[in-house]
Length: 273
Image (cartoon, rainbow, N blue to C red; front, side):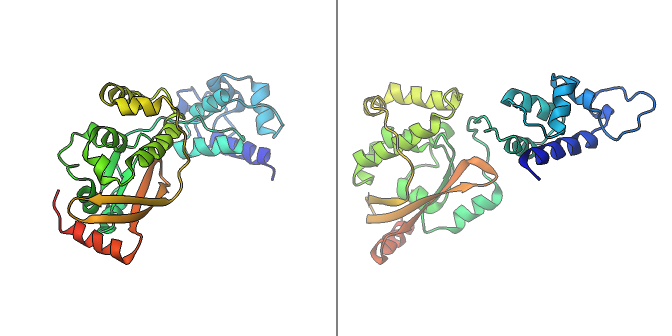
């Protein structure tokens, strides 16, 4: 089957799975076909019957995002089904703003299990959604912060201790800010992102200067060098993993770069804060 045939088959299956009552229509007498009629789907989605018929006939016609959204709403598609519809139509999904949704319990347990290796979960706005004891000890004082200040970008530019914790703060700040800017550029109207940028602009002249340079940086696994006041110098390799069921969430894991750094993490495990 071609992609268009898959699209036609999918639409037909979802149309036939709905009853008129499901969408608030009167079924009327002598209804011989299962589910909705094509003209009913066309009416509900605001397109012509001819155009929708062509779509179910696998004709090569243009389908806009707006029409796909209307079809998804008319056919009562789930979020997963809506994504599948856009994929079959060969149309990119509109980007969604990041939300501070909770981390699923299994992922949270994984973060805890990674201790003594520091690990945390962030969203596209770099809010810290979950972190283990090792990461809390490495950064220090996270539990005492209000939720809106548990954010990697905020901590980087407003907490003086971060400038001594990171061996090369200037380089790290520029790279992280470049990744942050590339991420938030996908959803510029998100209220949380704009509130964070406004707060940083009002608080940190260094952020203002660096932000005005428009740094852009793609993520790549690398080494971060820390100088912890109690654990000493610790070099950690880190990587970022996408969370399949929550596209705006990422798991960030730090691993010791050498046996000596593993010993540094062991010293970190004996600290508090």
